Image (tube, rainbow, N blue to C red; front, side):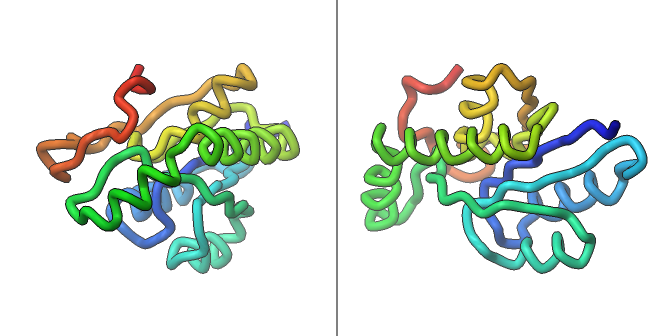
Length: 148
C-alpha cells in the first residue's frame, strides 16, 4: 500500500514555492508514494497538477501573514477570524480523512490551516521552511498567538 502524502500550498499561482512543490512531486516514486494536493483556489498550479495526474482539492483558507497593501490587510484580517479559520480547518480535516492521508507536507509556513488540521487529527506533518517571513517578504503573522 502506498503512503499518501498531502501537500498543502499557500498559493495556487506558479511561484517559487509551487514550482518547488511540483519538483518534489515529480521526484516521488509513485510505486511507494501517492501525492495529493490541497490548494486554496484554482490558479495556474491546478493545470500543472492535472497534467501530472495528481489529484487535488480546492479548499478556501486564509493566508497567515499580512500584506504591505492596507486594503488587502483588512480583508486578510477578516478572513483570519476564528470563525472563518475554524471552517477552513474543518474543511481540510474532512479532505484529509476522506483521502486517508498518512502525512501532511505544508509547502510554506505562510498558511497554517493544513498543519492545524493535521494536528487536530493526529496526522504527522512537516512544514517546508524555504525563506524568512520578514527578511524576504517584509511581512508578519496576522495572529502571533498561533505561532508555535
